[in-house]
Length: 293
Image 1: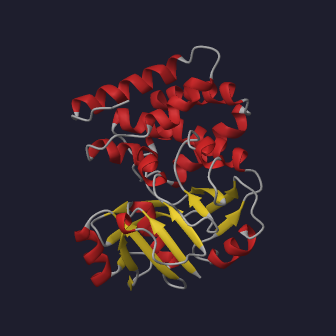
Image 2: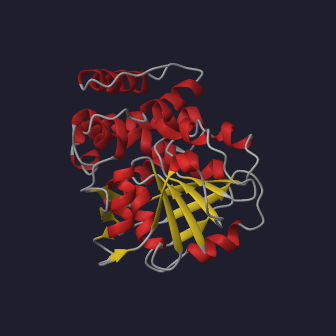
């Protein structure tokens, strides 16, 4: 298949490295320097064990290729600028952002819109190198009806990089949202790896309260979702959350798209969420990151 990937952060690179073994992968980036590096060296993932060749393009030049699927792997904070580009109307577009604030925008698009949840851990080292720090599954669901989704997912699926179909995108994204609102802000605020949510009893108590707030707001079973949070914290115990990495590298975090989304949905005060959002904003300010809008 012909696969396009927009955004060469850790997840975009991981997807390109694995899918590029069996498919014709085209990647779209913003910097000429990165384009040239990827064209010359390909992408090297430690778990794959060899460089994977990709075709590299500048995003501003548009989409010269006809893709079977186009994957958008930029952060939620960079999504609006990507949505300004004209995607081919007959090409399904898979969005891999955290949070759920972008769903309404996708419903308005003329092309088939899919959303995905990536349960892998990845760490970008430079333009061409990425570490696969935790193995999981890529789950995909359709926001707008598309009869081809199962066929394409079947083609993407591989035993060492499983891709699975999910029938309900709201169910899938809501569950991931709860995990993110618990793990991401707390690991960022306390500057710890994911496993400390379990091993630090004080931090675990706070995490449980955050999970209760989220489940109450989103009408989910606390017991089920808390078990999922603990399972993911355990399987990714040595990993740094994406928000923690963004903070350390001086980038705007996705706290508003994750915890802020839940706060806006609530009809009652959420003191833990309110504090975490303000605390992350304060840390961003100290890092020199200014939020506009």
